[in-house]
Length: 363
Image (cartoon, rainbow, N blue to C red; front, top):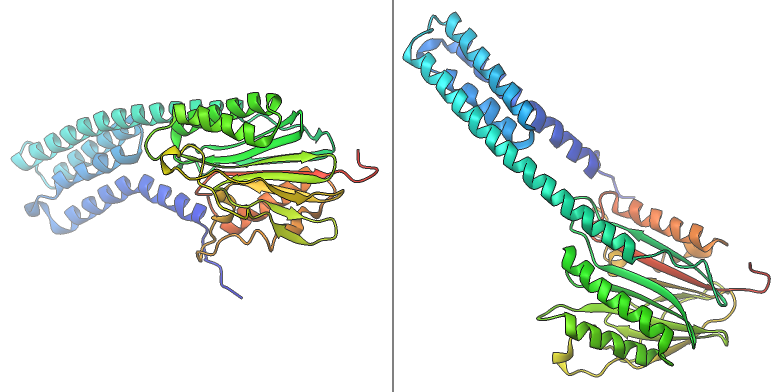
C-alpha cells in the first residue's frame, strides 16, 4: 500500500498564494520589530520598501498602493519613535518607499495588462476549440456513441486534440487525432483537419481516399516539423471496423464477452503532414465489431497521464469501467478515474470517443 502525500497539488498552490499575499505584511512586520529592538543607529527604516516591492509581484495596483502607503505610515511612526523626523535617515526611507511603490504600481499595471491579454487569447482559443469540437450524435447507424473532452489545467496552453463522427456512404466514419503543438496554431491545424474530414467523409467512397484528402489539406497548411497523429475508423453494418492509424495510440476494442484487445496495425505509419519522410501510408486494418462490442479511441493525454509517483494511467486495466449500459455514463466513469489517478491538474488535454455496436433491443 502506497502512502499518499499529506497535501494535494491544489492545496500546495493555495498555500503558496496565501504566503505570497501575506509576505509583504510579514516583511514590514519583521523590519519594524528589528528596528524597535536594535534602535535607530542601524538604519533599518529603508527596508520597509520591501513591502510594496513584494506586493507588486502578485497584487493588483490598488493593493500595491495600499501597502506602499502603509509602509510610509510605518516609516513615519518608527521615525517619530526613534526621534528621527527630519533627519537624513528618515528622509531617505520615505524617498525609498515612495520610489519603490511607484515602480511597483507601474509593474503591477504592466503585469495585469499582460494577464488580461493572455486571458483573452486563451478565451478565444477555447471558444474556437468548442466551436470546432461539436457534440457527436448519440446514435449513428448501428452505433451508439459518446465523447469526452477534458482540458488541461488553466496554466497549460490550449491543445489540439480533435474528434469527429460522420455518417458517410460506406458507413459511420470517425476520426480522433492530436496536433503536435499548443495554442492557437494547434487549434487552426485542428480546424484544417476537421474541415477536410467532414467534407471527405461525406464524398469519398473509401477511407483511404478520405485520408488522402486530409494529407493534401495538411500539406498545404503545415511546415517544418508540425504533424498530426490520428486514427480514422469506418464501421459498417456487416460487423467490420476498418482502421487507418497515423502514428496514434491504438484504439481499445472491448468485446461483448468481456475480452479486450488493442487494435494495433500490422505496419506502423508516420503521422499526417510529414510528406518529406517519403514513407508509405498506413494499410487498412480490419477488426470484427459485432453486437455489444465497443471501441475506445483516445489521445495520448490518457495513457501518458501520470500519478504522483510517475506511473502512467493503466487504461487497459481500467477498461472494465466502460461496462455501463449507457456509453456516456461509462465514459464519464473512465474520465473521473483518470482525474483521480493524476490527483492534480492534467498536463495535457484528454479526448475520448466511445463507439458501441448496438445489440438487439438497444434504443
